[in-house]
Image: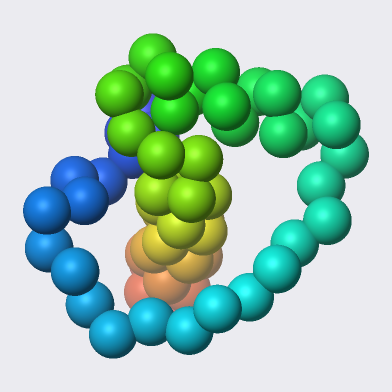
Length: 63
């Protein structure tokens, strides 16, 4: 499954957290955000959700 950042139209309750990223990693995320016309934050959140969904699917396949 190819990663695609999620749509930001639907806002949900959220909390503030900060991250420290390697400079080259941050630049890659910024480029993904630019190509997809979305925010840096949305790309990071979409990546986390994508990875968690993948893990859940793998766990379900093992059962």
